[in-house]
Amino acid sequence: MKHLIDPTDLTKEEIDHIVSFAEKIIANREEFRDSLKYHKLATLFYEPSTRTRLSFTSAMMELGGNVLGFSDAKNTSVSKGETVADTVRVVENFVDVVAMRHPLEGAPYVASKVSRVPVINAGDGSHAHPTQTLTDLLTIKRELGHIDGITIGFCGDLKFGRTVHSLIKALSRYENIKVILIAPYELRLPDYIKQDVCAKQGMDFREVKTLEEVMPELDVLYMTRVQQERFLDMEEFERVKNSFVLTSEKMKLSKEKMAVLHPLPRVNEILPEVDADPRAAYFRQVENGKFVRMSLIYNLLQWKDDPAHTMPEHPEYFKDTSIHCHNPKCICNHENVDPLFHKSGDGVIRCVYCDSRI
Ligand code: CP
Image (cartoon, rainbow, N blue to C red; front, top):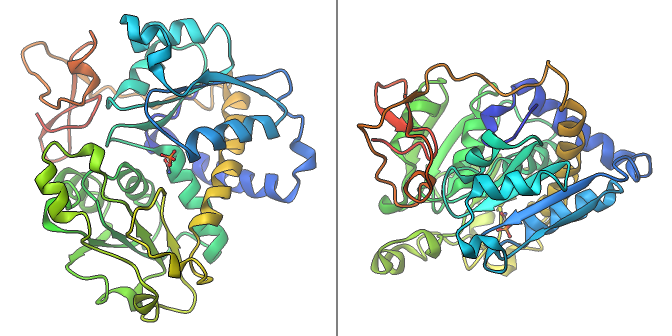
């Protein structure tokens, strides 16, 4: 069985298949209209969402299936103390596939370890958001015609932006990708991603101070919101919240054929005046999110009993009760889970649930 917790749970071939299959769905919508009739999806959303939850719902409905779940865990037995693992052990009796968003990093991973049905991570804390990554890849392919060889600028909150972390991981498996990082000092991409993903995979990357200096070379500009909800220090948030703003003036510096992506919601990092620019692809990206989730759900159910599509093995994971993950937003500090760690390429021990350095 295949779950999707991290983009690397899918092979490059599986990712390419899901993206191409989404394009096939777009071209043949009638053909897929009832393809998952009598199947059910649970959307377990412990954290707010507009796009992800509604696009999962719309995707399953368009495939002829049904959806149940919650968008506020306060109204469920979670408020009585039910764990993530027990919630999934209950919900798997009612559905064929689960999509989970959770503020605690590693929660969907914990769910996947006990579930008899595929679990999809719909965003866990600042950690990963793999279905947004699939959305982004489909959008890049549809906007530019290819993914290999692009120069992509990531701008804004690269520290807490889980969509950025997941997309960089996925792009590291494509050919000749150049990554340019544009962020205030406080919101730089975490070192472990620079080392373990960019440097280890030989991906060309550099950090710059202004958007203007790189606009002319970008094929994709990936804007992000500075996420107030991830800050522990509100003074720091106030200091950095308006660091980078995309305007029509700045768009004049960019190539004629390029695409501006944003996982949304935006606050004020892209002025509304940019929306009319044909290169502003962020609302087309939203629709792609539905198609790629249709493709993902369809394929995970096809692959469920296929031994060719299983989760990657991780023999390097080890249990150690003498060491401790100090990330307050890691599931391991809230629920009774095995203390699991792995050693990354640079010899640093990291938590399996949230990837934090120990
Ligand atoms: N892109 C995204 O995850 O949006 P939502 O938080 O609205 O789901």
